[in-house]
Amino acid sequence: MTDLKNAYGLNAPEDSKRLYADWAGTYDEGFAQAMDYRLARLVAFIYAEAGAGASPLLDVGAGTGLVAQNIPIKNGIELDALDLSAEMLEAAARKGLYRKLVEADLTRPLPLADNTYGAIVSAGTFTHGHVGPEPLDELLRVARKGAVFVLAINDKHFEGHGFAAKFDALAPRIEDAEFRKVRIYGEAATGDHKDDEAQIAVFRKA
Image 1: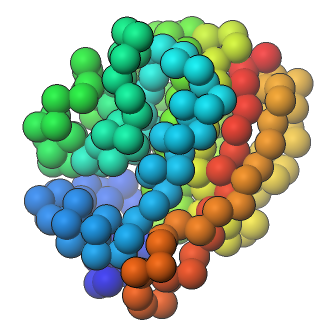
Image 2: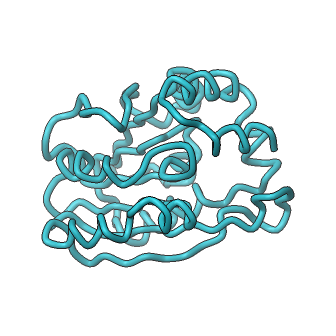
Image 3: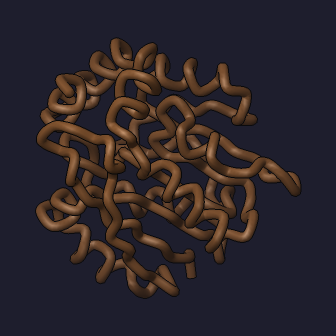
């Protein structure tokens, strides 16, 4: 998977924009289906289990909406998508799942008000070539007290980029934290990354 290799090698937001602009049109079929990508489904299922319909929900690094399309839209759940790539957001918009699309860089202050969201989810954003743990402070800012978080973090990225220390530092501001190790891809995956794993961090804002 050339695009996956390129994604893991990104160094700057502008590089990400260029890659995902080119990838947006084929992402679902050329990557998600071809690699039996299961992480987005797992994040959605854990949100349904832990979040109990908490809303509004912010899908961070929403891409083409793979997490949202696995969340049952019922009982008034409202979903907003946040992504760096305008082209990926356009692909997500065509699925009709989100009330609002937010084009924003996670490495900068977000154009969102304090205490806005009842839940925040993410799959595929906290990984090689993307962002480290620094945006967690900003995500906590835009979350309401008691908001549920379900954040997937590539396991090697977690180990190598200070996530454990960051979660220790955040301990006074979060509660009920747990980490679930899962496989990112299913049995049909091929290539160098087919056995990659992720830590799914599940917690609430204290």
